[in-house]
Length: 117
Ligand SMILES: Nc1ncnc2c1ncn2[C@@H]1O[C@H](COP(=O)(O)OP(=O)(O)OP(=O)(O)O)[C@@H](O)[C@H]1O
Ligand SMILES: [Mg+2]
Image (spheres, rainbow, N blue to C red):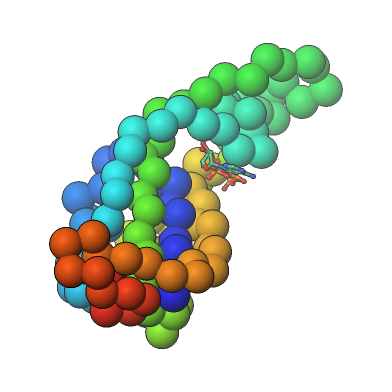
């Protein structure tokens, strides 16, 4: 089992929900977060170039964080679909972190591992 933690632009959330539904992901957890990447929260590439060399403070932009635990065979198809929807060629498209999940428990039934997803 793998967990995908995807931090994306808020306006892409509805499309990502559809993708996750199509791959029968079992469940998902969504939060609204604030964050920044390498541009320290400056959204416009031209502005980034203009301020190059000057000291800037870190700005945080609103993002959506999606956590989903899936069978590892679903990881690459999800990444491909998310990139199709979210890659705009502009900075700030987001990031996907992938981690191993040891076990899971469906609390109601006691099912473990993949059966619990
Ligand atoms: N190394 C990181 N650790 C934790 N969160 C991160 C990291 N990098 C990015 N994020 C989160 O992902 C969001 C989107 O990052 P972003 O797409 O701007 O990454 P980037 O590395 O700057 O890539 P790009 O150059 O395409 O903008 C950030 O607002 C932040 O919430
Ligand atoms: Mg960035």
